Length: 203
Image (tube, rainbow, N blue to C red):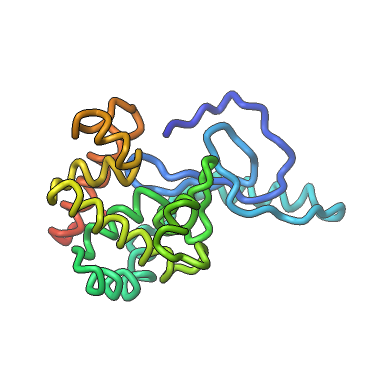
């Protein structure tokens, strides 16, 4: 994802952000192009100018969240789900890093939600009752990933491509990574994080 700074800022009314190709989360109180709304704030007539100024200063001072700290926050849940579904915890961490940057309230414009960015249909398929519950979201995403690995005979590239674009897109592309720019960027990003997490490299 890229940021175009030419967009006209809107009135500050929430928290916006996106995760870049390095898995780093960026935040703003303005609806800049490429940023997704994560939290809607109630309108406030008083102190709006001061709040906007403070938020802008905070964003300018530091737009990088401590990725290692966020991973530690969810490490126990990820380890638990990884054991349950017999999936490498480092792989789950890599997917969460790219999908949501460990923001359990993340929601994409297409409706994917939570840590593992489950689409409504996928959440329903895997019995996720509360997509905003980190444990349920992780379980649903891990079960889906496990089934994709079975479907594509442990071909991780294809399983990850299917997680991003859907298994139908991979099958329809002749069991190849679909020719979608997002998917062809997504797969190597996840694999890069996976390799680094397995080796213990801190990002």
